[in-house]
Image (cartoon, rainbow, N blue to C red; front, side, top):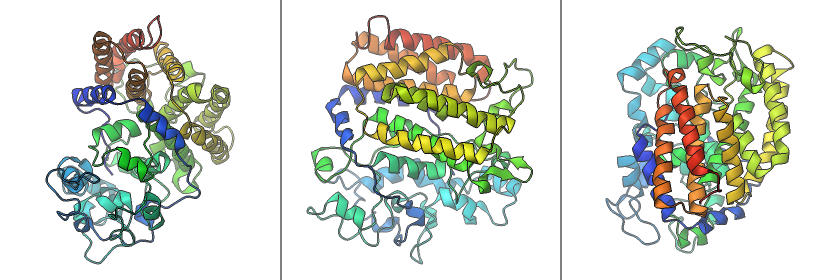
Length: 468
């Protein structure tokens, strides 16, 4: 399972986002209000009933293997983009490195990493139903996301074929933001069948982190959203909604893990993988405050604490989507912290109760139409909490930085900033991302992070309102 890097190269992430917004009409984002919620759950492609035929079936020149764009409706170079620029294409090769060999050895795998399901489940398309000569060496290929192609491969290219017909034949709805988030999180967080346990982290596996919008930006798109895309019945989702939906689905999946007895216990220990690594892992020379005390959590120093960065982002999101729901979410967050850190109440029951609440919020976010005032409310809520130094833990600061970037994108799309203000704001966001680029020693850089937040507040919100 690849950890992913939210902002490995800061400049390459920040600048393209602004350029993208400057050429995009905000009316494009409004189209996402027509999203239809899925009628029933669909298994992710890895577990689906349709056979996976392999990347080679998609890579042919007349299909998706052209070196350069060719077609009007379909560019035909999708496989080339994936192969040359998408890190998913290299996922299997990661298992052949010395680091992966060390992880496999430390973890006690009986087979090499490249032969073990524990690794192949996320570093390749380890589908349960695949043809005999399927190549796992191709990594996370086409069908890992789009579904086993045996029923739709020969028909999906027809100009008379609708998107819904392809879905009926087993194509996975990657355009649906909720389903996309569920698919991504099945590896970038884990599910009931594959999960990066704390023991695997202890063996050397990188820490997992996830944010849907930033991941989509850094992963090169091999599709074009145009009139044809929409006319076929596909959904186009505004980036800030991808961020919001990704956060909500991540919280729901984390609560699912907390309520799952198979993932809740590891011998006499809790499953530390769902906790904030940095409550325990830090330099003993660092001066640290009681973890979570400022948020009203009351957790004691040295107490392992739930990684609640997604919960915090969801609470800010609801400020703009449905402010009346924020007190119940805050109460639920306090209860789940008390259950995890203090054994107050049944942890699984508390998690399931909060999961039901989050499930009710996801449809609200899906049908939400991002406008300037709600986006501004979210930004104010998020930044003010940071200025009050409530993001002293690294995961929260990391998520806050990329959240501000996504919010800024959307605000600039609604009411474009002047060129001068845009440059200043981009500089502030650059500082935020640099302050959170590395987890080691973040405590020493926390003051830089707070200063960058103040800079972003001045440029993003200011005293005269958004976009002035």
